[in-house]
Image 1 (cartoon, rainbow, N blue to C red):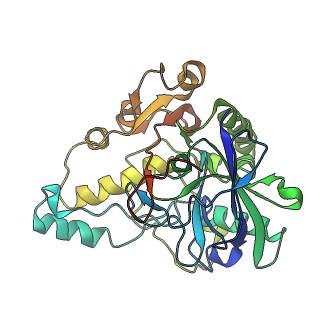
Image 2 (cartoon, rainbow, N blue to C red):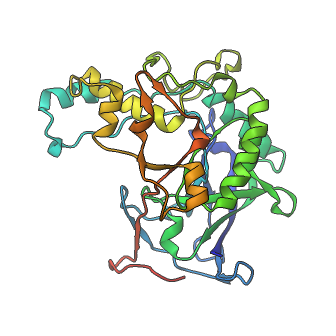
Length: 335
């Protein structure tokens, strides 16, 4: 059984759209640097304060400190993915082999942040729920099952776990979002079978709410260029309804559309995905056989023509882990 990392802090409600920019599955927890905010229990019960993350820098897609200058960490809510509120495709590097003219065209197309239907509504719903536990800020605790400090940090420097709020810190925000149908499950190989099972159960209940699931779409050939990020609203829930791709697939679709518009790629969406495969497993095989024996798959295997053939809970993606370093460059391996 893995150990448990616990991070105590507060959530600033002003960060959420439309006042701020945070969406329904990524949030910032204010952590007092120097205080006993971080603790770890190797046995899952006996917690001891750890300073492993103070001054720590991630080495992955990002190379930033995991605690920012304002004493905050960014948390990716494990196992769930909300419709995208604001997404921009990754920048093309000069070393990409793409001509200067095509890179310029790509950058022009990519200036606009894109969004999906239901993203605004889901964010407002989460903030409204959190406001029932406090005004302005809400006490919270992030928990994650890990054995080593780096295991909780994804390649972008975000902590990955579940956030708990409310009386006795018993309300699991991740599970609440899934149960209420505001998000889709997105599983990673860092998760345990039990964690996947809990979210599968919550997802079944969420489907019955007919919110984001009512408009779940498998059509990868449909891309609405008019759906763009609206920085401060206004809130327009009545018109925030329409087809929603699995957010992870949508993010790839945005990159594809921007590159296609710039003349960088001319093939199908599946061909585009195959050039930089997203490694994954079928959830059923992952749960029954484990990561060590389940057959490795790739996301593009499940694109047939213009359709993504699965529902989100049917896949487990291979987690992209990162290294955690001290300011002097040495690896952080122990709590």
